[in-house]
Image 1 (cartoon, helix red, strand yellow):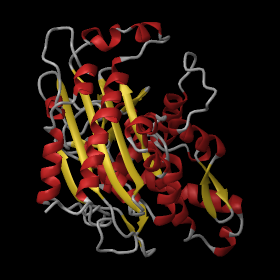
Image 2 (cartoon, rainbow, N blue to C red):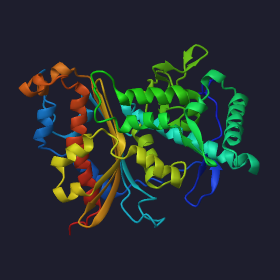
Image 3 (cartoon, helix red, strand yellow):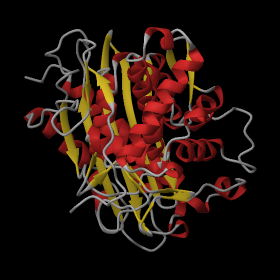
Image 4 (cartoon, rainbow, N blue to C red):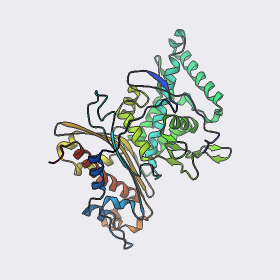
Length: 423
């Protein structure tokens, strides 16, 4: 299937870990080097999904309709549920190019399934903003010395060059990034404007004093980013980086309060593609490159981690309060984002935690949805739920299943994979 005519391939610069720069294209793009086919990991993963006796899971997902209780994780992909999982073990020496850090052991369950990701998709524009900054920095290195020494001249030089490239590619002025509201010159390099940076951080770290009944900083931050980055720039990056596949999707956004229209039609990669599209595989790829410090560059990967640290509004850390031993909880670090909307929930996390003096590192991506209605679940009949204002939505129940039931079991898979096998 040919790409929509409004999708243009732009030039995006990246660096490898040695500092060598190159442009993204189908032949030159970083890949996480996932390795599959490890019998032990596959067995541990399958056993975890088929684990029985999970009474807490059954209690959460008991339906008043008379349907059978869910008591195995495998059953989350049966009947009304759709489940997608990507799990990668990156435990090892970060200075050893042959370690699992750079050749992650990977196992998955329907990791290319199309499940609505909700707010997990917000890591896409965060990535695109940092890429635009890096693209600007690359152009700045080619400016004459006198221009580099003058911030105002450097800004004009770089902005003119970017806009000329976008015009040549055929992107209308109204669809180009609003550079003055995204980037500011900081000495001889570029930084995100204070307003843009704040809006970006609102997505992963909303203010503690937020009145959620009046406004949602995470959604408002996303709206701010999308309206200034615009869809053509983001779409080019997602495709050029390999995070989106032209035929099957992955990272793709064609609507967030505004739509990306191409000759009056929605700019979809495939027929019926939803406005937010992220596959578990593409999210795992993003997070693996982040862990390897190969997402854009080593320096930018560190900047991205600062934005994404503890980025899921407390869901995973709160679940770990009861799911991990106290010593393990004290040595927990993670980066990522969650999604919760309607009958959909998602988590994409890069997790590091210290177990018996050794750092365990892994990526877990889970997307879950259901065709059941909120009224079908006994969970919402409790007096505690009835007293809540506002009451929990169905998406929160599904997110609870992910962080309290599914991810802890997958965490156990990683721990077992890094323990000596029993004789």
